[in-house]
Image (cartoon, rainbow, N blue to C red; front, top):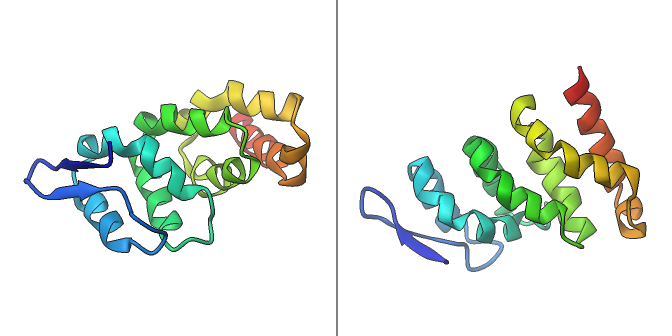
Length: 136
């Protein structure tokens, strides 16, 4: 799914490129439940924290809270260590502890047995840092 109507009738859509801040702004102005069907598609846009859309989309994920967990879990369970790194940095590290705690098993797996790519991209280290915050 790449487009849908918000409750006020505005068209919302996924960004079409890394500079499509207009699409992100419309998503941010929508009510929370309306963007839920787009979360998996939006997760792709946090794959590179240098993209202009990455930070505002990360903000949407943080604001969405627990409803974002399934999309974030798919990133963490995927095989793209760079995407995982930015998901950890831009979103998961900023979630309230109770929400981030829903990803505890995924984070522990990354720490216990990281792939070579996850080690290279500091994914295991970031996951450990988040887990330490959850233990406090």
